[in-house]
Length: 166
Image (cartoon, rainbow, N blue to C red; front, side, top):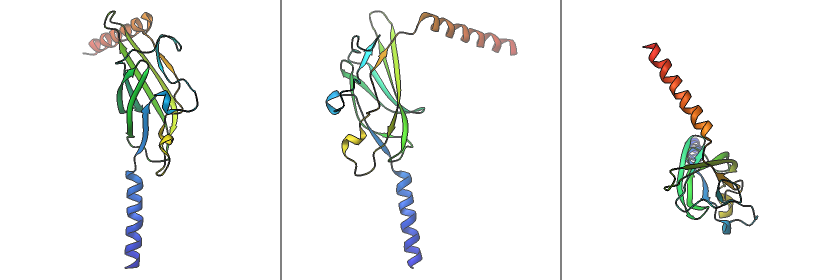
């Protein structure tokens, strides 16, 4: 009987450890941070105009989308606490923040991203442990025309080679 209780206890502890989800406070609101680091999203260059309200911001761990938010104040997003897919407590991971803004007047699409290290909080840690302290400011830019042209050429080459095989 003692072996059964001991085995059940260890199995339950193992299952809870596997099911634990790491979390992150998906926000760059400056009042949450005390270190004075700029975490805003800008258009064109850091220090330039802030990304407009409505810019779509996405949070990724690797290729997994873990949450989205919109800027509610120019350059600032507040996405709330997000559970990170497949990431446990007290685990180091690289987070990527991607932002996209479409200028309705010109049709230009501004994009930008930043990847930074993050360690998920352990149970019992203070709420400040889930802040994205590794994130810094980044800028959204319109891709260079040469990049777009190169992409179109590559797509055309793929289509051409595909036709030749048939």
